Amino acid sequence: MSKTYLAADFGGGSGRVMAGSLTGGRLTLEQIHRFDNRQVRLGNHIYWDFPMLFDEMMTGLRKAAARFSDIRSIGVDTWGVDFGLVDSCGNLLGNPVCYRDPATEPVFEKYCAANDMTAQYATAGIQQMPINSIYRLLAMKSEGDRRLDITDHLLFTPDLFSYYLTGNPSNEYTIASTSELLDAKKKAWNYPLIEQLGLPAHIFGNIIMPGESRGCILPHIAEATGLSADVKVVAVGSHDTASAVHAIEGTYTKDRTAFLSSGTWSLLGVELDSPITTPEAREAGFTNEGGTCGRIHFLQNITGLWILQQLVAVWKHRGLTTSFPELVEMARQADIDTIIDVEDPVFAHPGDMEKTITDYCRSHNLTVPSTQGEMVLCVLRSLADRYRRGIEGLNRLLPHPVERLHIIGGGSRNELLNRLTAEATGLNVTAGPAEATAIGNIIMQAQADGAISSPADITEIIEL
Image 1 (cartoon, rainbow, N blue to C red):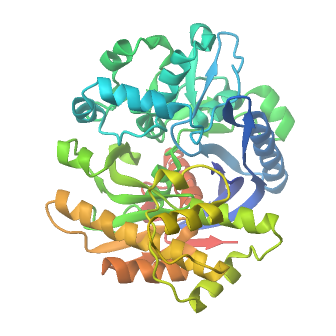
Image 2: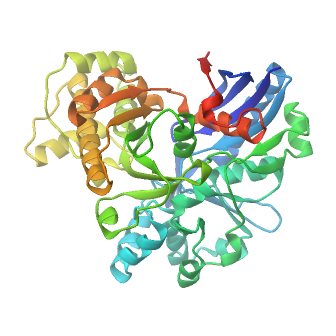
Image 3: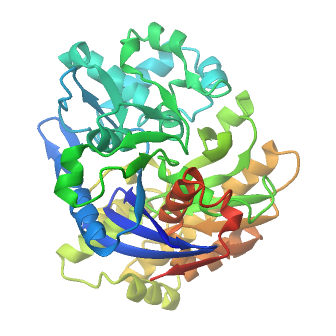
C-alpha cells in the first residue's frame, strides 16, 4: 500500500512542492509545482516576499491533493538564519529580511570588537558571520525597530510556513541552530546570551526535533487545498542542509566521508556526534549546525553557485546564452587558470557579477576572463580550489583524514565541477542525488509515520 508525503522545499532562487510516494522500500519522487523566489528591495532593506511564497506553496498543495489520495503529511525546509516575527494575534509583523541585506555588517563588526567571540563560539559553535540571526536582531535594536516590543513568537522561515499551516508556533532544532543563539552542546536556547543582548526571552519558543509533529493542518488550509484535515505537518530537518544530508544517511562512514551540499551555498563538512568548539575550529571558519537524529554537522559555509547564478542573471539581461548545460560545455572548451577567492565580500551581494569578477582580477593582477566560457571555468576552478582548502581544514581538526567526498544537491549534476573538485582534493568523489533535500525531507516524514525505521530502508529512489 502506497503512502505519499509532501516536501515544501524553498531555496534562495526557487521553491517547489515535491511528492514522495513510498511503496515498500521504493520511493518515487515527483515534482508537483515549481516557482521562482527572489529578494525585493524596499526602502533600506532587502526582503523575501513571504505571502507570495506561501501562496505558491498552497498552489502546490492543491495540485498534490488533486493528484494523490493517500497524502500523510507535509514537511517544510528552507535556507537558514532568516525569520519572521508574529504578534499575539497571529499577525506577521512584516516580511522576513533577507540574509543578503547589508544592514547587519556594521553591527557585526561593532559587536565583534566589543565581545569575547572565542567564548561565544565555545558555547554556540556557530561560524560568526554578519548573516546570522543574532546580528539581524541586534540591527533591529540599533534601528529602534519597535516590532520586537510586540512580538510573541520569533519563527525561522520554515517555522513560519508551518505556523500558518497549523496555527502552532515552534522552533525546529536544525534551523534554530543557524541563529548563533543556541547552546550547541545542550541543543537549547542560550538564555544567558539572549539576556545579555537585551532580547525578549519569551519570543524564543519550544525547540522541537526532526520527526516531531507540528500538528494537523488548519481547517481553512484543508478546505483551500482539498487535503484531508488529518494531514500532519512534520518537523523535518527544516534547515535544507540537514534534510539533504539525511537523504544519504547510512551510505557512508561518518567523519571519514565528507559531504558537500552544492547549491547557491556550498556546505562542506562531516557528521559528528558532538560539536567541536575549540578556538582552532573557530579560526578555521567551521560551524556546528544541527543535524537530524541529534547529530552535528561540522562544516564550512562556502559561497557556492551564487556567483554563477548572478552571472547568468547578467547574461540573461544582455540576451546571451543562459543554459547551464551550454555554459558548462563552453567552460570545457575554455582555457584559463585564474582562481578568485569566492569568499571575498565583493562577491556576496547582488549586482553585475561579470564586472565584479573583472574588477577583482584586475586589482589582483590576474588574467581576466574574456568569454562566457572563461568566466564559468574561472568560477568552477575557484570553487574546486576552495573545496580543497576546506578538506585540508577538516583534516587538521579531525582525528583522521577524510577519505571520500559525497556531493549532493543541484550542483551534483555539474560533472565538470565534480571532476575539477576530484582533481583539486585528490579524493574519490560520489555525486547525487540532486534532489537530496526533498528526499531527506520526505524520508524523515516516513520515519515519523512509522513507514520506515531509517533511511537505509529505502532501497530504490525513482526521480520522475
